Every structure is written in structure tokens, then in C-alpha cells.
Image (cartoon, rainbow, N blue to C red; front, top):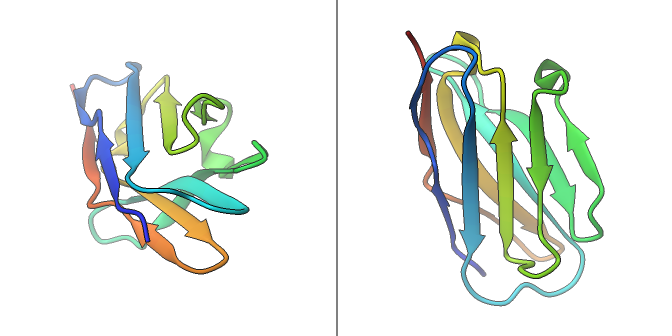
Length: 116
């Protein structure tokens, strides 16, 4: 089972951009899905975007074309989330997750705060 580590969170003004990174340690075999989820204070964790090992991506409706998930073929263990036009409602802890046929694993999360 791999372990995940996120980075790239921080404080950004409304309208700004951030790129989150997630790297999985160890080897990943077979079909899998990596994704980004978020949890705001007092709210349930929700899916932001996912991308499969065959590079099919899915986005939550609230992304509205502002975010882009990517997973380079040169590094199958990495997944990125480019976030543009950030809004205060995007403030949350962002988690990386990997789902394989055998297990799922979560990263510890990275805080994103959108505030002026």
C-alpha cells in the first residue's frame, strides 16, 4: 500500500491561483484512480476531481472550469491540481487519495485558505 504526501497549499487572495501536488510512495500496479477531495470546517468531505491511470478525468460541478487535474505519464505516482480563480468558498483542507482494486489510501491533507 502506498503512502501519499500533498504539498502546495497556502493563503491566496480571491481570484488567485494555487497548484497542489501529491506524490505516492512505492509502486502502483493495475488500474487505479487518483483524486483530490476537500473538507471545509463543519462540512463533509467532497470530491473535487479524479483522474484514472488511463487519464480519464472527472470534475465536481462547483469546479466550473476553474480547476485542472493532471497526472504526467512520466511520473505515474504524481497528481496535480491547478486551481485558478479561487473563491473564499474554496477554503478547505485538500486531500489526495488513491483507489486501486486492493486498497485506498489518503494523504494527510494540505490547507488552502482564500481570503483578502
